[in-house]
Length: 365
Image (cartoon, rainbow, N blue to C red; front, side, top):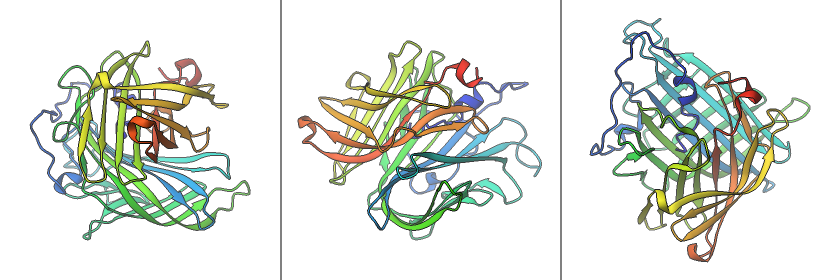
């Protein structure tokens, strides 16, 4: 899920097809092949590359950032013609700046073609106009997004091998085996570069930054359970070099349809937790002044016998993507602090909260 992200499910679940198209199936036993699988998988219905992280300015001020590229197979055409809308590329970018007081974000969408929008196979290379993420020959990622009111020009340097989620990359998202995705993460990416920060005057300030990031890559062809209303997801880089991922898919009454977590220690040992061992409990809520949506922005996440407390960098990290994927959700930078069962470990990560916005508040069904 970091990757469930908006996942285009809100868009695709309301898309009508003249005849149900056939997409590639997610099945167990197909191991992720690295780095070949870092690239696009156009036969699957949806795919996304989702990067989040914490940055620090030269005066030691924190910033949160997010950039996500989505690829959607529309089921229309075979991609042979340049004008066929067989694949859509969508991008979101956001910056959380406590000095500005709220998240700023931008979004873009285009059909693949003409070298202006694409997601290439075999290696991460996704582009939408002037926004791009590419994995270079040395394994580093170049990330660029000149957005409305802010900009990201960053380099990610891997410090650890990929964190393969689920069973060799087969990650369940519901009680049915077909409710699954292929999913891996790259935690503890070392970040350097420049960010243009927003300002009330409209003239942004460009600053050098360093920090750490988390990159998720996920692809799937199946929608969530019909009873699913949304999900809570956490990806966190721990201060000791470890990594924590946890998610809960919620039913309409708030109960868990499915949940999972993975904890990787600094030496690479992975412990995975099933639905009964993972839960998200609200500690404090914040109400959006724009959509009137109430989000549990401070949470306790239970993973096995340990509890992790999440606190937001700023409360207002709501992202309105109704012009692209159709969803309004909260996605923000959080600090993470564990209890005695987790040896008091601390870290920084991103929390994603979807499905909290009511139809009457957004005009969406």
